[in-house]
Image (cartoon, rainbow, N blue to C red; front, side):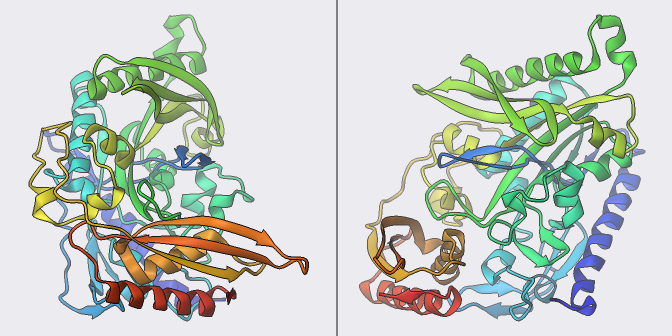
Length: 460
């Protein structure tokens, strides 16, 4: 277990994040211009490779807070990539030692994840995620002028209470495990959804808000999953004065308003498409729904949403009110709108990718600039009871970074002694150059060593 002294830096950072938010809100709330704040959170489920898991959505802070690194102090990872050891996000300085602690058993954040903090792809105007974010903002600004506050620059370090308890995630939910979430220590995490700040925003008096931010989750390796991605959430509170004249109860009123506005958002993004509503379950909304559209010959989930659970409103000083909330994944929609085939491309700095997109140009189709050949390497080992595929994928990513395109289980069997063997195929491919046999063999050798040393397995 981490000592109190080891936990303190993260706790201090959380306090700094809250303090910085209060400063930003106070500084700009009196201005006549639209207010863009700095926060993020989300709670909505996203369908991922045929599985279901809590995938909250959220927004963030304002655009005028600097997020450039504040120090040139850097370290070199084993992959040769340079990683800054001091960052600034939302006005909060974060050192590598605050987030990555290799000898702390309550910490599972690797260097590769720390290097993504502060990048904030969603705040780049000429990036597909920034373009999509701005289009959603435009929809709400046009339909509700000056009503929704926007947050897109919140510090991603939050408490377990903020990330899970405040949005009613059950204590036995899989998302709370070290297998799924990046823990800085037992009480502090990298937010796994932007909804981690929802309760705090309500307590501070916000009734209409959009939240966008980067979120962090340990996950599989393939073309649609990445350990850092981006979410947006919308939230609106109603008082009895809003629904009493309608002749319906508050829940019905909120659900009707929610569906009407989200159907309009889908049409704004995708055009005149066929839509359908599917009943769903989320721990933080009741009733809950998923919106699907018929696009390019298939039904596609766009977002999750629902009427906010009364407990969340009551616990945060909104007794007697009702509210709706929705959440969506920016990468999921951007991959469809821009025809981007691999989620790793969002992180590319190659000008052949970045030069294809411009602010305000939603739906410009990505033109592949090359297709370098893949290289396949297999690895087999006897697993232990503690083995999880997420841990294996984390090792592969830690060694190969974005050169790992996919990890697939291709064989599994149990012998007469009850021992289980897994065989995984790792696909290596760069999006920018051809890989040499020598470097692939070196990567695979390091993967074998790391797997055996860290995962308590026996290589076959």
